[in-house]
Image (cartoon, rainbow over all chains, first blue to last red):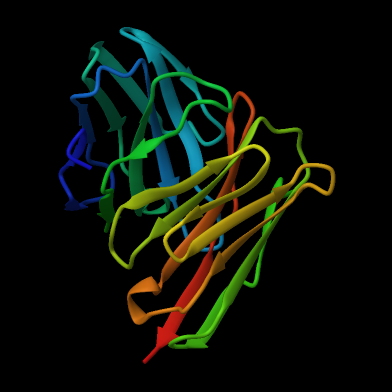
Length: 114
Length: 106
């Protein structure tokens, strides 16, 4: 979807190095989310943001931090990457929470930690 | 514990067959979503529904709130329908199923 882009699309990094993934939206949606997708698991929420500088943890937040200094950008940082963080990461945006709001997903970032 | 269970996990069908994917959930919800993910691709929203039935082309989604169950049907399946189909439910947060991998053989 053109309204949300993730970068990079693919990245290979070494254990112990910091990594930042970027999610950029042009929809002016309030809510932004970072998920990871692993075989055998549904999408799992890492962190989410409900406004500029307003963020909160999801169910798998250990080892990750986020920042949102502008409405359009939501950054996910792995301070010191580990092999267990090898995954596909998806960003999503939404106008609001609750049943009347849908999600738009980015195309994903495939991260490999070696 | 999984709040959302999908069945089957994997499904192979011949082109033209009628396909059903099931989703059961255990939490109170305000809406249920069906998502599609092509291999190596992003995730696309197919349906969002809170009651009854919705139809889009060859895709039909139904939900029974009392039974906490939803089905996604594909009529006249085609190889381009090959993808992972994910059920997700939401109230104030999303719960995702692990997906059903569909392969349609020509």
